[in-house]
Image (cartoon, rainbow, N blue to C red; front, side, top):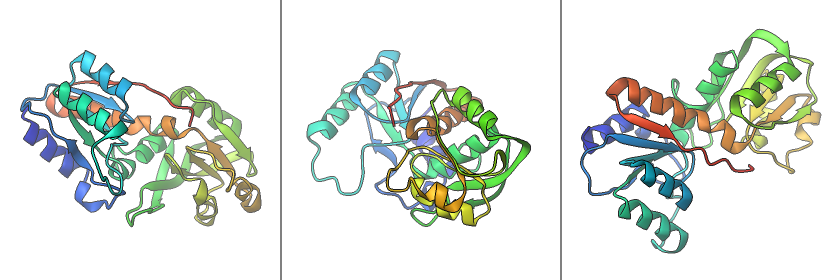
Length: 251
């Protein structure tokens, strides 16, 4: 597939232009090759990930967390190493951050809702103006302990739980990655349980203050589902070969 066709399709499908972000998204590093057959998927960009993708023969590395954030002053140091590795291996880099959190089909939060049986009622949590989180009804009501077990198994993670809400989960709010500062907002929207990624000391007591269950499933774990779903979409749409490279962090 031609590079320009795939990039154009991704930009449009992910509605990239609608999402203001913390740095430029989409094609972040452009290599020389024009044909793309193999797409490597990952959450982050780091030298071990780029090397693994290169060993597999990837033409493009598609990630959630790219390498351009806020003001980039120079292509040197760790950033320079990442760019050099990509170009030395003829690999394009495409990043989709908030746009992949908030996509209604392959977005992290929409996918998590489907995984755990949530019928989405509304979108919420708009860090840069466009909502990326979801909240909705748990179709088959279940004990909190059962939901936590499902999260542990399906995301291959060790959730940390603040059980200050009801024993049975009825309404679940979801924000992948970091959403610890959204506990009060989740409660105000009617959630009795809130699933997010990264923990926070500063927001620890909010769960008790507002009487809500908070499940911290890991920043990394909650953001593996979007790139995987997007990869499946590309396989179905274009027949591209994709592979997810799993490099979990402790966060």
